[in-house]
Image 1 (cartoon, rainbow, N blue to C red):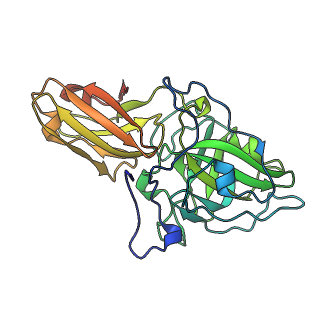
Image 2: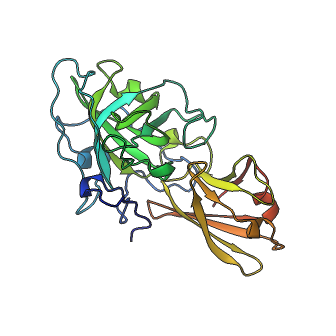
Image 3: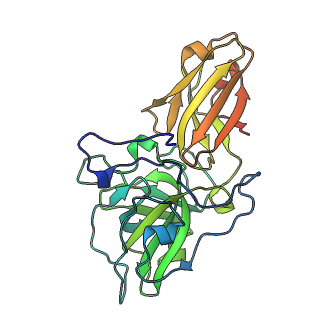
Length: 303
């Protein structure tokens, strides 16, 4: 059952971002954050491998791009192009922008220790906003990215933590991920990516899955997000000890956050339970209080 779907009016099927109908896969379930990880880097496949081959078994009926063209010679100067995307991944240019840990990206996770990450595409055509970013709703999702090199296709698993700065960008790699796959040198490669679960991949975590209250919170205003999720967040449900319940609305500002209404922040309820749903069909829960939700720069581990 699909937990969420994002599609723009007038957007062709190849541009729809709707992860998933229960087929976001990859990684093994973990009862501790990042436990049992196996690095998803440097794994070469057969030349011309498709996203389904690169990203694991996406499932029957999955809409993945076709096979990538083989590359000969130096493969780090691909022709700039806009990506083709679906609800299961995409195909297009794979580039790089830093070799440092993720710090201050558009997902608003702040300074992290994550070294396997990427910025995701914003546009599917010049200025159309029909890429997979969608205001940060893709934040936290993991993907297996494959690039075509003169040594054959090379793959690495990353977490999406930022957005691309320009249109000619499918996935923009950061940390140690570029060096794992860009064997012809840092540059622009033809590549593909398939969405997978982050569960079981310690390299994309720097702590447990947590509800984080962003800076600036008060009894009148608060924004929250989920950090170190197993996949993209599809929704936040809340209920309190006084019998109230509802859904936290997605906030456009800042990106990758949900709005906590003043009615919750000013409630006399002793506790507020928040349940996060994710695109891999998993869920996490935390019990907080109105006072805690009104306190910025605070983190609460989820179970």
